[in-house]
Figure (cartoon, rainbow, N blue to C red):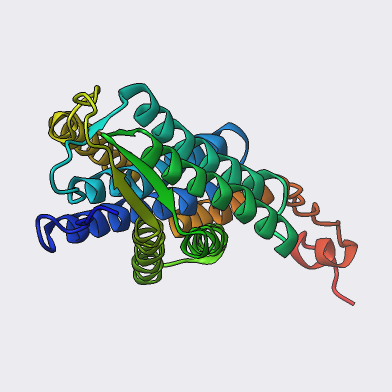
Length: 284
């Protein structure tokens, strides 16, 4: 069995991976907060953006940055580009399934659990598909106990993420939830990586595919563009509290419009006695 290095660049890659997971989770939770305050297509749009942030940046980008620190001495590692990109699409899609489920099908505990199971299983599948995208002159095997643990972490993390998407309010609480999600996602990744066992071949040809460094520039550019666009959209959109206040104001205005018009004052009635006093008649 070959020696495996998960931190070839020291703490740089795990720290960067965690930061990406935190940023993606934070942006995603900010989007779900907007989604809670609207309905219909507007809610679907916000949930789609949340899936892009959490699944794309918080999970897949975290996974790939962490993989930059993975190396096997005396073995060149390359990546199957189509399979790597497919793993990205899966990460976004399974998060979207979970968010849309709790966003439109109900917010009860059974719905959250079902959504968490679907999303967690998808995230675990994305991770191991990303591992399968590695090409090297070696056989990859996995320790079953750690694989089961990594899947369990993915299921719990996904369920917690959906609960946070429904319940967390306020900037500080949202940031705290994003920190927890970052720990869970990166913990799942490194648990799955610890399960890997590499057995090198002796006389195989150079593997095909792209080097990890070939992904860095497109990755940085893509993440920067997505994060910037999301921040602009979130900054321009009213938050949940502002939407609530606006809705209350609209209700008051509508109630005022529906009130019946005020009655006109009644015309004064004639008083014969007054006529006698002011008209010069005799007083009694």
